Amino acid sequence: MSASLIEGANYVLTGLRWLPRRELYSFVAIPLLINALLFGMGVWWSVGQLQHLDQMVESWLPNWLSWLHWLLWPVFALTVLVVVFYTFSVVANLIAAPFNGLLAERVKKLVRLGRAARPDANMNWKDLILSPLTELKKLLYFVGWAIPLLLLSFVPVINVAAPVLWVLFGAWMLALEYADYPLGDRGLSFREQRQLLRRHWPLTLGFGGMTLVLTLIPVLNFLAMPAAVIGATLMWEQEVPG
Image 1 (cartoon, one colour):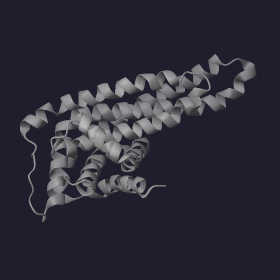
Image 2 (cartoon, helix red, strand yellow; image 1 turned 90 degrees about the vertical axis):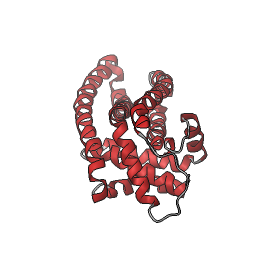
Image 3 (tube, one colour; image 1 turned 135 degrees about the vertical axis):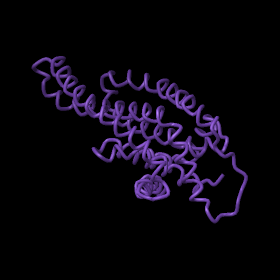
């Protein structure tokens, strides 16, 4: 395993450890509340959908193929979980984008404390107001790739690989989602951010993979969004200084 994968994952865990810092209290509170409410709804909704999906898979299969239920169920269940939790992450970030931007700005200042000053495009109120539009652009990018993946999930034989593809795609999208807070502040466009993340893909997938894991763990998923904002800001400030 590449050391960069581990380093990327560690930045998310570092973000978790930074949450109790006194300097971040007021910046973490609102994103944390938004994430808790939306992920609570996501957990409730996904449990019902998984039960419905289980019944559908079982009803589709003839009796002589009933044993396939135990093979197909994990495939469909993992796909649903990744899609549902990433979708709720997108919605949470869409609502919390201005507050996440302020959190990233605060973390950036703490990281740069004591460093030599350098030119920087500091976030202003116009950036905060327009930040939900950036989230919509990322949502359209997600939908553009998610539809083909969703169709592949229903193609026999190929659908066995669907959960792996969804996990990789989910990790990529989450890394891209949270990278926008520190990188967008440098003036990088969405396209330029994607190019940068591709050049550092082990670091990117390590970060996105750990963020995805957090979103799937009860209780910790409430902390995933602010922890990922902090972790992404730390990662790109330290690994690729602007």
